[in-house]
Image (cartoon, rainbow, N blue to C red; front, side):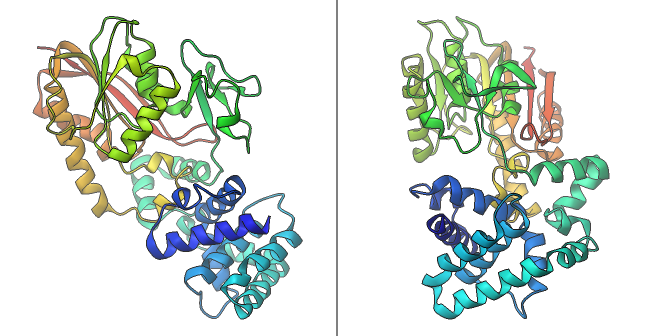
Amino acid sequence: MSSARRDAIFALALWHIQGTFPAQSLRDSAHHSDALEIVGAALRKKSSLEWMLKQCVRRLPTGELWAALLAGAAQLLAMPGMAEHAAIAETVEASKPIGREAAKFVNAVLRRIQREKPRLLAALATQPEHLQRDIPRILWQRWCEAYGIDRARAIADALALPPQTCLRPLPFGAPPPDCAPHPEDPSGSFIVPRHSSVSALAGYHEGHFVIQDVSTRHAVELMSVQPGLRVLDACAAPGGKTAHLAARLGVNDRMIANEFSAARMDTLRDTLTRCRLLDRVTLCQEDATSADFGTAFDRILLDVPCSNTGVFGRRPDARWGWTPQKLRPLLQTQAALLDHASGALRPGGWLVYSTCSIEPEENEGQIRAFLQRHPDFELGRTAQAFPSPLHDGAYACVLKRLR
């Protein structure tokens, strides 16, 4: 497994130095699953691991040496069941390309962590709660103010766990036999066994299902799509929701799916092709804040770009770059998307707004502001999911056009 550890060190270093998404760095790794597990553990526990490393070194290094120490510490302190001797020996081996002295340094630090683990964990317990729970201070303060300390703790605890992969069969599909029903949606969502390759599951290449967290099912359900309706998915990639919407239309219906990003458009097209649904979808690559999609729609799904705070367990790197300053342009984009998309809705039609954020400004705050600007709309059903051991965080609501 030293090759997987080497790939994990490389991905952590690239993220640390250049901000490259770890999933992108590991996309072509032959040891993708094992390396991603180490990277995920390291980044989910980054602040507490760095604090403990600082108790063992005079100065925390940067670059690949930082990545090697963080990967090793994660295996010793954040991955229960990992054999400590193998974690140390193989992380040291994976550090040798950095340099002989670097590998010796990694060995010394990891062996000290192994010896002093009880003392380090006890000392960590005296530190500020946001550090212990690996949430940036500003986010921890926001969540405590918005939701109270108990919910903030529950959110942080959920985001500390390795995420599970779920799938949702399409109406004409079936779940793979080795996937367990999800306890919150036993007839519609299924849990993929850990370390399984999704593309190797029965029915994947036949398009029987899409990868979709159970929390995001609400956006599709709130759309209440039926045959004969005119439907627009304005921000459609990667295409899981689009596939479910298209599958609920009649065989002669054709919805519109729009995606501005060329790279994400390729993913959207691949998803619909795999699911044998491309013939029910007209693809557009337009800026959804200004595009003219044609005649009035009965249903519009607006799954907007957001801060992703509901999926920080699945995207652990994203939490460390979150700032209030980055939130402001997102709020402006969301408002522009809402204003423009609402104009394409016919009287009596429904617009479903959704995010994978748990920030009030992006969810209920955004909707309150929209309703003030658009008195011809009213709020319908709303679904809010906070991160839990069973699912990600997400928000969705129905906006009904009255006239």
